[in-house]
Structures are given as C-alpha cells and as structure tokens.
Length: 134
Image (cartoon, rainbow, N blue to C red; front, side):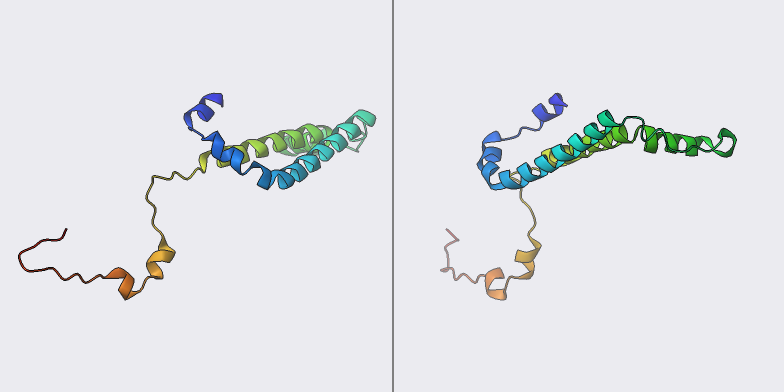
C-alpha cells in the first residue's frame, strides 16, 4: 500500500488547502463510525454468548452454505461487520487516491462545445496581399 501511495505523486499542499472545508463532514462521519464500533465492542464484551444462544437447526437439515452463513451472521457477526467496514474504508481510500485530475492534461468540455455560437467558432481575418499572418 505504501508503495502505491508513493507512486501516485500526490501534491499534499493542494490536499491541505481544502482540509478545513471538509473537516466538519469528516469529523461527523468519523464520530459516527467510532460510536458504532464502541457499540459493537461493548455488546461483544458485555454479552459475548447472546448470539451463540440462538437456536440452531439439526446438522442433517442444513447444507454447508447455510451453516457457513449461520456461523458468519450469528457468532461472528461483529467481526464480519468490522471486516466489511475496513474493506469499505480501503475501497473509498483507493478511489480517492486514484481520482486526481492533472492540470496539464487536456480534456474535452462537452458543455463548452455545445454552448458555443458561430461567432465564437469562426474568425474572419483580413490579410493584406503579399503578407502572411503574423
């Protein structure tokens, strides 16, 4: 991961310039995720066996896929959600790191092309006889 970040050539001065603009939104999301994680860990510490006490069907009536789903979504639900949260943050981070627009790359502006008029598109230049454009 560090190698990929080093290869991206990120301009950190530009990133720091808009930091305060998005700080309230980021802090709100961070606090919300922290509260959710505290609830998950708190429930796991205070009553670790409450999920395991759920009634389970006989082994002959359950296929392997169903058994795996029952284990993942009952006994290991907190770890499963934490792993999903980590993967979500990693995916968003990868998208943010790769969606950098370079200044020197020429891009097509469809709105400018559609919105132009004839006067903007064609310029008539009168040139004296025997002289070129200068």
